[in-house]
Image (cartoon, rainbow over all chains, first blue to last red; front, side, top):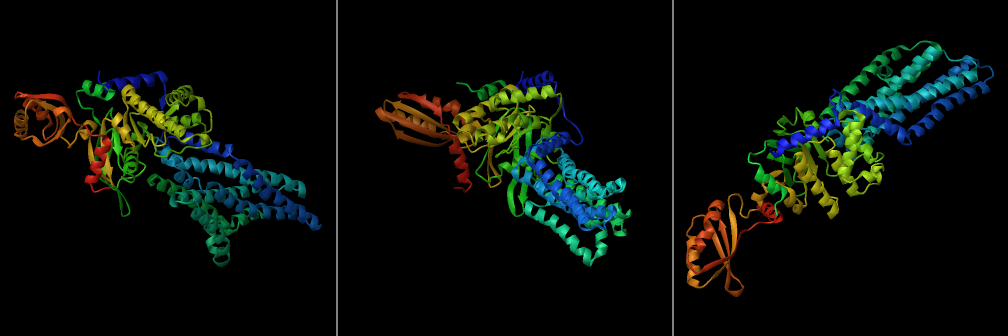
Length: 276
Length: 340
């Protein structure tokens, strides 16, 4: 028997005895990468650190503002207290989303390219789309949870206790949804930029710069705010306390969803062609 | 003593099919030409040493073969599959060890191998665990399997790298400097593992290294690259034969009873058209050292000794073909190309 034939036989015997099933999925490696990303969130100090910081800033400070305003203004009704707390919650929630996204994901793709783990993974039969999508899914899951979801629940309960009048739950939920969409926008932007830049600084600068520029542009070209999530905090706030969303907000929600989809598409496309 | 390489040569009459084949493979980064029109052929079930100074284009070639970089022009195939269009299919059958392998420091060695294995296998879990255990045994890391790898030494990381590279029982192993950070014992172990994988599993191994002694010890074929250009590609025996392909240099020690007899022998040898040079040097005790350069190795093997012994009065004390060390061949090639 020739060496190569012997080898095929040996390889066949090994495979049979081990009964290993070859992985062959359209997004091969997705589940494996999801597990890895989840492990990174749960193993390190990131989860506790982000959880504590955003709980303090988004939930407790907002609730404290509602409490202080209620104490300082005896004429304030429960609705006024809710209004003061909600404004602070939506402002801090939208800023926190951007900071958390940059802090946690600026190195998500760039870091792996620099460290050499991305080429290692992609030398295996791992789908490049799976590599990016796993980061999108897992980072969104945990960032949404620690930056917005837990703080929102705590804030909702505390504010109801302080004002003695719970915020309208469905409207609060819808306002939360608007912030969640804003978080997704910045996350998809950050991942897309991770496929563009080779170092973290420009990425962080672009994402922060985009947010800050939005606040400035709102004063000079307010119509532009309809195209981006810059004033999502206002849309959420008005929806919760007044039950409506301003016109620019109504336009900015689908526009932001479209931008997010575009960034995800571009991130996938660029990473598919990236040289590692 | 016969090596496994010699044994395989003797037993395998038909040439093995090509596993890697590139035609005019070129990679440029802006104005920099990292790889220029590379034509490479690697046969199945061989250990192929890929040599060259730093920046020669070895890692670039490996990345192109794995789909981690895209060729600027030319083409390449692995297992007959196109390296650009069918990269996924190629990677299913290949194991790769990077030059400076990096893994997730928070994972243990076992977790790292499990993570790597799951790109190839969807289950069952116990079979994956068994494969992970076998790989840890193969590289001697079983006792450190559950330690976080951020505390691993360079040698331990390299062993882990070998383990993860062969976790899928690959038909082709691409190893970029597999023994670079290892001590002599670690190097020996790596070479033994490579030989075992070739001989027992039929794995083709395509590897780059700077350690020329290692290449000479285990490689079947060698390619030398410099500044992105292929300087030579040949079976190692051919490369080690002094003078280049088809040529050979023979060393003899003769003793003759008279100067006349030696002169006649010299004339007989020099009269042959395949003899390009004959250098002579006096030895101790009336011996004469001859170095005969030839252009037709087969003819020389058949006739040279007979020519010398045709007349009376000349005795041959030793006769052999001069073999270069790979290091000599390597530096000759580099210097001929204008390198220092």
